[in-house]
Length: 90
Image (cartoon, rainbow, N blue to C red):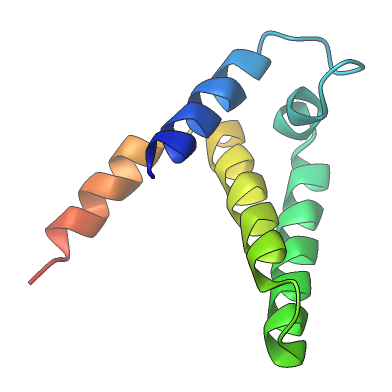
């Protein structure tokens, strides 16, 4: 199940080297304002979908994708985030 998340991370990192006019991910990686606004937008859409009990999975996937791109754009490695979460386990 988590192979999909690992594959997404790999693709995001690969897209750093692609052309912004050919890759939406590259465009997000290189435009921090756009990346921030997309994360905020997608979180708002997820909250709305939960309130309306519709399309929750789709919106949650959008949030995860945009958050992963945002983290990568800001040199926050998901591996470090996962290590931090592991430290917090009781």
